[in-house]
Length: 296
Image 1 (tube, one colour):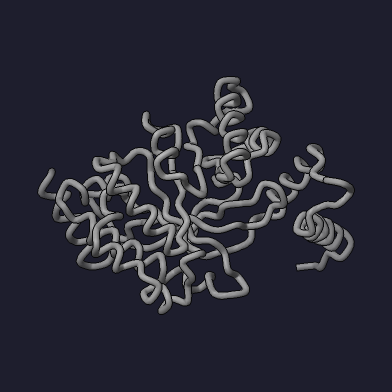
Image 2 (cartoon, rainbow, N blue to C red):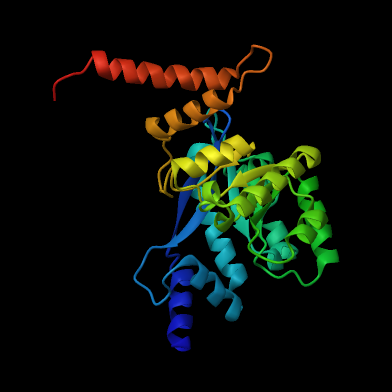
């Protein structure tokens, strides 16, 4: 079986059998799309069944750099379509921390390299997963500082899925913390999860680190997350990963507007202009479809 996995890995890399799909990250205050996470998918029949299996195989057979390069290039090529103004959103890219300090990787993310895709480093957020083991924390911290000085942002991914999360957050001082979906799943019915996320929100306020809740799948989870004050959300409730970039559905926008209306996001009598625009968009579409239906 191991030989078949190695052959399948080599085939994927050599023939560039990777495509990028995007999942939106939504501002939970006003319903706007803040950015997209780039996710890699295999485009052929293979013994390798999913992305986790693919990257684990790359680590085992010392092909991680080649795979990361392929996935990154595919992501930037696809993102080029929507990173150009006026649709200048953030692009979240997953990176294994074990190769971030590799000089080849650093050379692969120079401003000159990004310029050919018309992408500014300020639009790139590196996602570092807590699941990966970091063996040389001193070198890793130096590497993180290097990327921050180059105007990249850093996100800790899957926070809550490992056992060294607080140390990693303290060492990295990221711009974003992405809460693992297992913390979000059923949070509306779990007081412990609720308390943990509430604590992270309070931490985010004093540390100036934004929280992204991953894996939101139900209205009740969304409502709980918004009421807790989490800044951003991601998950199937908003949109599944897709190759094409599109707006979130009106029903989803309606949910965000309704929940925020209950929470009363009006401060000193002034409401966010984006919130008003999205509210107007929803009401217009609702009334237009009701009173100006056209026959098929």
